[in-house]
Length: 256
Image (tube, rainbow, N blue to C red; front, side, top):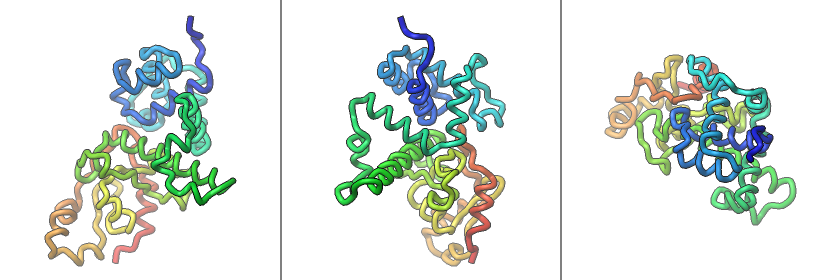
């Protein structure tokens, strides 16, 4: 008989998955939920219910009037609070637990994201692994929130999509893994956003820098930027871009 009480490790893995799948796809028939259920010795129904419980404490869903299950427990609330207070530590712990239960090391599991390990050792290596693993988690979370679609164009090929930080990774440690600090953009718009050639206003409409507008006579400008000016981005199912972060981005760009 299964223990009705969830262990901390099981809760962490449920939260890890909660962040990686759209809220609307929380179902016992979801292959990712079935896979996790098999891994932790729970039924798909139990895992689906747990993810719905976690949704009860999602501040973004709460702000939009979306509620999860009413019978969420104290442990569910605490794991969400831990994420709010110490995202980097919890995310890395969750990825480490997941890899271990899959019979892998983090270095083996994320080998493609860790190309430079041969030149590193000790604390430098550990920090690099943690950074790349957490960045990979952020990417999965942001792409999930945006239904694997670019917020500007709707391009839905993950290989072309990037989880763009509004406030750069290096400039705000506390908000690095905040889902409201990310926007899913295809490569061109990610680069333009990163280089402050485009930004978004308080209504999520695209603003184009005067520097970019100097190229308004070019075909590529009209095709890729001109017709997008003033267009509202495709908003995510959760993790709505933080308006304060967008304001920071606007205030810290130079509109030549």
